[in-house]
Length: 125
Image (cartoon, helix red, strand yellow):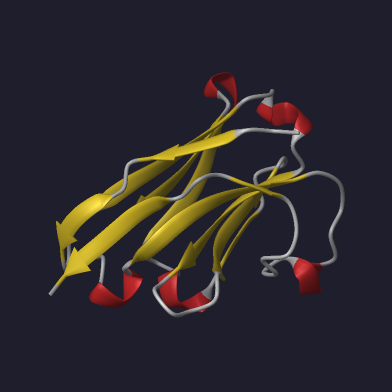
């Protein structure tokens, strides 16, 4: 079992930037893929971005060109750099860790892996 701790959320104006961090309790080398999901009030948890152990990345369409996911293996940390934030990005952001292979059609499913406690991101208009 892996423990995930997110940080970096906050309140920002539209057009601003934030960087989220997720630190793992075990070596990140042993984790197949790391990702970020988000959940707005009254909504289901949705996929944002993921990065594999070989640094292959995927993004949901609404954040492409604005968000960047990266990993620092030496620090056992995954980052989500968020630029040009919009009010619709407001949500609790959760870090996700998965072990083993998942087919591409399950990449965006919120039903697998381990989760952190979440960090609130609020974007004001």
